[in-house]
Length: 126
Image (cartoon, rainbow, N blue to C red; front, side):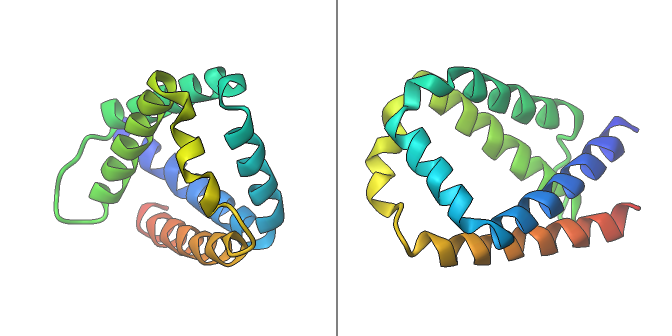
């Protein structure tokens, strides 16, 4: 039961976050620039990311060759990202050169993929 609720939650997050990336790429670019310039101000955010990812892994650690593995891989990715960000917050500065005008297109394409993946998961779950 908890795995199903976790999967539903992640599908909704994918849809909303994907649409946000698609319709508001300039806001995400500005946010990314700010985070990269001030990595130590976001320790609490990194902790939340670690907790969120770890919760997904604990509640939905399903390794089957079907749609549930998407949730599991996402949970592991988020947990690892949170841990790395807490242990080495300045790592993002190595990628600062990638944040530029081209990020608009990448954010839109990524957002569309996120939203479609979320819709696919929601269709399977609801």
